[in-house]
Structures are given as C-alpha cells and as structure tokens.
Length: 347
Image (cartoon, rainbow, N blue to C red; front, side):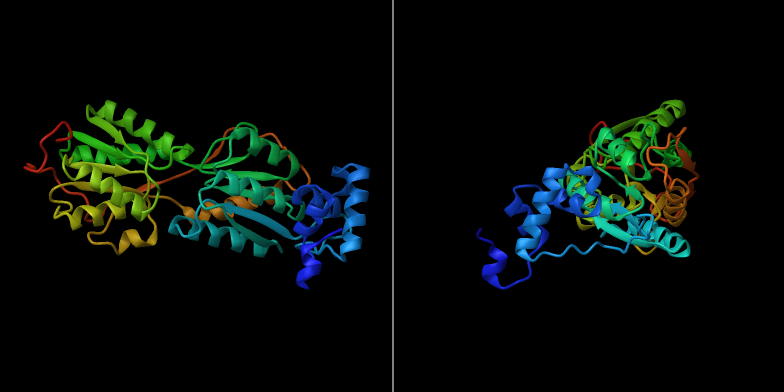
C-alpha cells in the first residue's frame, strides 16, 4: 500500500484513510463518530486501514457518556458581511451561556462548499443554525432529520425558521419614498438563490401597487459593496429618483459608485438599504435603512436549537417573525426634477 503521508513523514489524515479505503472522507468520519450509520464491513475496512496507517481519530469535541458533545454549528454564507457579525455575536453569547461552543462555518456563498462543510460537521455537533443558506429545501430537511436545525431568513416547511418581517420593511420603505413624492422605484436585487431577496421583491411590488407607484427590478447582484458598484454602473445612465436595495452592503456600494460618477445623493436619487449594519451609520450620506434585530436573531436561533435537543426533525408551525423598523438618515429626500433621468425610470 502506498501512502503519501508515510512518504512525506507527516501524520496521516482522514483524507489519507479515505483514499486508501476507497471511500469518502465523510464516510471515514461517520465510521469513527457514528459507526451505526456505516455498514459493518465498511467500518471494519476503515478501522483496519486507519490502524495500518497509524491514523488516530480526534473528534472536534469530547462527547459525554450519552454521546452528546458541547458544540453547535453556525453556518453563514459570507463571514466578511457585517450583517453576520451581529448574528454571530448573539449566537455565540447564547451558546456560551448554555455551556456550548459555537463552530462557525463560512460557505462563501457556495452551495457546494456548504454541503461539504455541513456533512463533515454534523457528526460532531448537537445542533445546526443555517444563516443565509443556499441549500435546497430538501437538503435542509435532511439535515433536520439528523440534528436539531434552525434556519434564518428563510421559511422551510417542517423545519423551525426565523425570518424578518420583510413585508413590513418593504412597506415602510415604499411609504417613506411615496411620502417624499417619488412616483417610481427601482429594486436592486441580491442573490438569485436567496429566499429573503424573493420575499423583499414581492413585498415591495405589493406595497408599490397599493400606493399607486411603479416599481421595477434590476439584478441579481452579489450582496456586497462590489455588487453595489456593479448596480451603480447599470443605473448611472438612466437614473431613477428612488432606489431600494436588497441589503445595506449593496446600498453602500451603490452610493459610492454613483458618487464616483458625479451623482449627488440624495439630491438626484434617494437610496434605502436593509439590515442597518454598522457601516450604514458612517457612510456619507448616512444610509436610510430597514433595521433588523440581528443580534436577537442569533440568540433566538441558538435558543431554538437547544430547545429541540434530542428531537431532530421536530415539526414546526409557521416561521417565527421578528419585527423591523425604518431608520431615516440622510440618503433619502424629497423628489426633485432630475435632468439626468431620460428614460422610464424617472420618478
């Protein structure tokens, strides 16, 4: 048997065992952490190969006599997004108070990376919080059958979910802009796979219809400052008088991109974001935004996971909905005649 680890002098890893045994790394992990989930023949082959290689399994957390660990997994789609910083802080404090350690996994907006990370983490954790997940509903329900699972910012049937009151938030944004005399709105969309993005777009359309305002959508864009810059390039030559974005990062990037092109904010276009992350308060002008209780969302999610310990796949009713509010800053103002706007977006 030829093993790279032996040739290099480094300790053998789970990947070496998987390669030598002809199985996936996740199968090796299950063979040591949850042997009942692997066939007896496969488990025996993995143990034999591991012994030959000198591999010793080291679980991520010591298990109690009943098989439980003291770890929870929090999966976020982009750890660099300030939106998740408050969620992480709330989740971490709730976990620590309950005597648990939080395993933070950044999936970088990749469904493939999220699937692989979740599969590796499941054997060593007691529960999972999915924040900004890009997995399909079927994969989320499968995870919930294995460990108590809570989903944030998305509604999944039969899985406990915590969502923001997106319809209220978009209604507040539309009413604010209508009150300032804007007749047409543009929605700058976030990720195509985002449940929250779809909900916010539908909610804004409904609110605009009730108010007798026109609304159209551009995108999708990455939910980042860079994504907002791309949106600014799309809008600069046909500038609307009012813009609502999927999140604050898009709004901030949009403002910076428009300003770089000589557009004055809010004199020529008003901008509203969503989330009220910290940079929304220090960008110039200050960003009007729909404020979400992000830290509360993190704490509530961990509390919900811990309340379902020992009962994976617990059935859930409707999602828990957290309130939002509109924070008015300097990025919105009363509509003025806009000589820059030649097309249908003029509001």
